[in-house]
Length: 251
Ligand code: 3PY
Image (cartoon, rainbow, N blue to C red; front, side, top):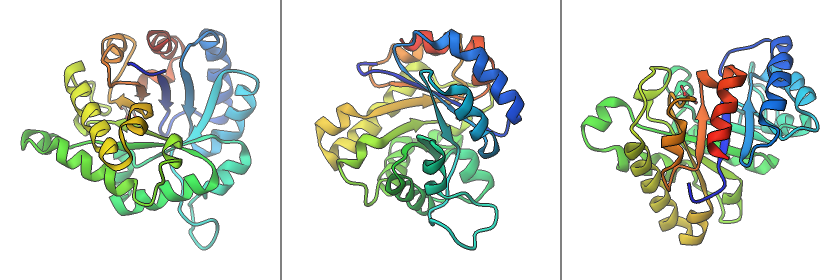
């Protein structure tokens, strides 16, 4: 990367509050000297424990989704304003598991992005193609479309509170990783899309992560690429030594 990297763990639906406290306490000394951003995105019910455990450390805390309304009759949902009040700083939006299993669309992703920004959160916006789309040769177009729709109504100032995570769906939780060149190519195409919308300066300042089975073994090669500014880490973020190795590779 040419920018300061950001490493974010996506814990998905893993860890209880007690396990959250233990894992963050284990991580803290291992990542204390990081020269990159360090974020853990935990399940909603683990946020209190994570915020408490991370207090005073260089680990920031994020959620994995938020609703677009401030409050109301939306059983089971959590508002961005609630997250902000709790002290949460980041929120993942549009992860492919949300899009695939829970009906999130480009349009609802955009609504969630807007709400998160309005609440004062920083968004980790996920985009990425399915295997069939890659094989059809439409990856760049598809990812550009996802990016443009998600950023609808987002101002140039607000872009400083957006991180984009490129996550090829075929590499998520499968152990398959995009090659470093594949990852860099799509991250560069996302940067070009953002440059066309907001100008080159804004695009050059944007953090674009790669996600999809990034781990302690492959992180250094991926992060060595100029347009890969960090990682959104799945399984490897659940083990403190592995997560710390990725943070070290990004520092
Ligand atoms: C993965 O690495 O599997 C992820 O989905 C990270 O978000």
